[in-house]
Length: 331
Image (cartoon, rainbow, N blue to C red; front, side, top):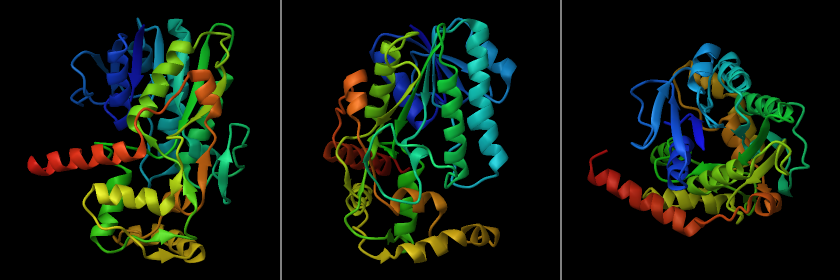
C-alpha cells in the first residue's frame, strides 16, 4: 500500500514510517516544514500544514491509506491552538481522503481520553469519556477521535488507536520534563504509593498502527472502533518514573506530594508561567501520574494480534543506551 503518515517527523510518526518500510509499504511522509527530518530516506516527503485543507488534499493524492499521527501535544497553550491542529487538522485530513477516494484511515488517539478524576484499574474500551477532560489536549483529542469514528462507513474505514504514555529513545516530551525537574531537585511523586500505570514503548505503538492498517477494510471487524494499546504490564507509578530516571542517569525519586497539595500546585501553574517560573505540577502531570491508569488490552490482542515485543526492562535499556550515545556525541 501507498500510505501517507502525518506527523512523520514526530516521535511516533518516525517509528511508524520505519515499521511501514520494514513491512514493504510505500510511505509518503507528511511534515509541516520542508526541512524537517522524517527519519527515513526510503519515504517520499511532502510538506504541508494540516490546518490547510487545500494542502491536505494535495498531500493525500495518490495514496491508498492515511495514518494520522500529527497532533499538538505541548503541555501549555491556547485552547484554540489545540483545536486548530487536533480537531480541524483531523477534519481536513478526513475531508481530503473523501475527495481522493482513500478507503483507510488509522488515527492516533490516546488512552488518556477516558481519564477522569478517579483511578482507572484495568478498564476496557467500554469506559466512557468524561464530560469534561482535564486538559485542552485531551479534550481536543477526544473530539477528533469521535469525528474519525463517526466518519467510518461502507466506503471509508476508520480505526482509532489509544496508546498511553509513549516513551523510548528520542522521546522529547515526557522524559526531558522529568529529567529537568529531577536535575533542579523539584521532582515529586504524587499521591499514594503503589498505584499502577500503563505506558507504551514507541516501537510497540508503531507495530499496532501497522497491524491495524493491514486489517482495516470497510466493514472489517475493527472498522469504526477504538483500541487501547499499551505494554500490557502495568507498573507502579514510582516504578515507571524511576525506571525512566535511572535510564537517564538520575537517582530514583522517593519524595512525594499528597494529592490535595499537587492539585493546588497544578492550579497555580498558569500564574507561575506568567511570571517566568517553571510550574512544579501541571494539569497533565497530575492527570497522568496522580492516579491509577492502566488498561485492558484484550481487544487489541484479539482483533489486531497485538503483542508488545519490547518489554519494560528492554525498553529502559534501549533508552539508557541511546542517551549514552548522545552524551558521547556531545548532545
